[in-house]
Length: 151
Length: 432
Image 1 (cartoon, rainbow over the protein chains, first blue to last red):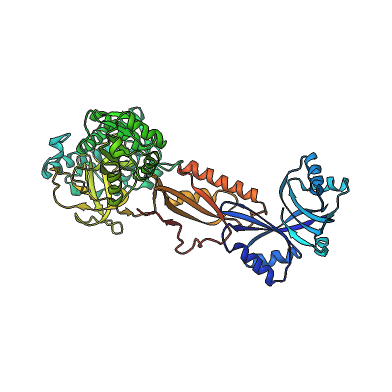
Image 2 (image 1 turned 45 degrees about the horizontal axis):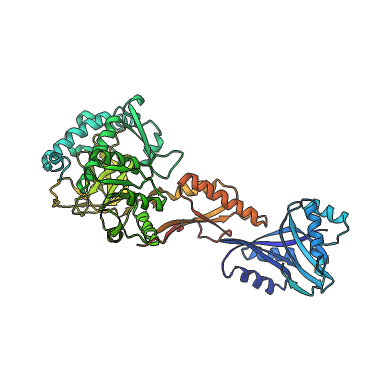
């Protein structure tokens, strides 16, 4: 199943993230999860939002550089070892995680782990074969997160 | 106190007579080159008809572009067999400005470098540490051979490696250094870190500052810290390199060796000569170079002739510290860089957007270049790794061309001032 995150290119300086959240807030777009990876003078803001396409449109209109990037939103168990099960599976298949973040869906029961991997199709096949549940954008929209958490 | 008393203190009248004789020879010699032959034929200059120094005005100016267009041999006035060395202007690759020398040319060049060094008080028995890059850059080898001619012991240290430089100075009791002023300031911080005081712990007495414009304040700082007499010099590879002009013991302007060069100062807009004392662009003509004579070369450097005689007794006129450029050339760590070079490289790299900015900064006496580059809107795939790869590629490409490793920062599309109109491409934040 396909999920999309917003990837926003931003200079690593005060005000860039504030611009993004201000626009999304004003447009009534909900942020489900966020991670920021930065490299010295610049970085990429990754976000899961409830309406990625509209978010991309409004952010682009304001001059931001935004891409919709396909990621995999995996349901894992919210208990010790829950994430490990998934990561070991990816490791066995020699799949590299480029970026990841997550949030809890139901405390002590379910969490969503969002991964950006180097071999997206292979990963999807592996997860399917092993019966691991993934969410698409609509399912993510419907999910009611308990609270956010960054790994 | 003179290397060649007769020529250094020659009367103006005799100097001008010597210049005319040599100019006639140089122009005639130049007409053997592809470039000047065509030029003289096209505009009807007869080298035989140069009968006064004023007649030099009949010859058109030579620009850097002429040298580039005639790359590499179009200015050669002798057969290639007679050449023994080439140099190039710093900071450019590809169609860099190449200057070829015959043995005679090197001998004459070495002589004026030796004359310059001797003028500042350097003698046989001095230990000369040459902290300049050896290679195509003229600052290294030019000073090297001059010092050898004076009879000093040379430590060909080359540039960089600060701790070793200090070690060499101490181990071999260096008395004279040749150093880029910004590096001299940087090196002072290394001295401090090591707890070594050059005034107390070294034998330094003379410093030659060159390869980059600097202020009187910078000179004073260097003199105070190192306990040396620091001398300013000016030269450019097109005119051989170092030795074109040098300060004497009075340090009030740099004597241009007028037996080797004809000096003109022109208004860069009207191209008309300005009187002594007025600021303008320095134009030089080689008088003794056989391999590659260059006539009326526009240096793009702004200066003025200091009117009146110098207390030292030398009759060769003095130019003032270079005030700036008529073009946008930057000098960083002794390397000449044109913003257009950077632009050309950037625009050839996929993923680079339309605008860029060059920022020069000085931190701990060390100069840095920051290049801000807009990423093309369509290039971004949402991947940080991709951006990092682009940043590295830009850094490598720039480094291989301008010989300096800049700090490249990627910025969002449209984050920088637009290129149309008066875009500020270069921001120089360096201060003394």
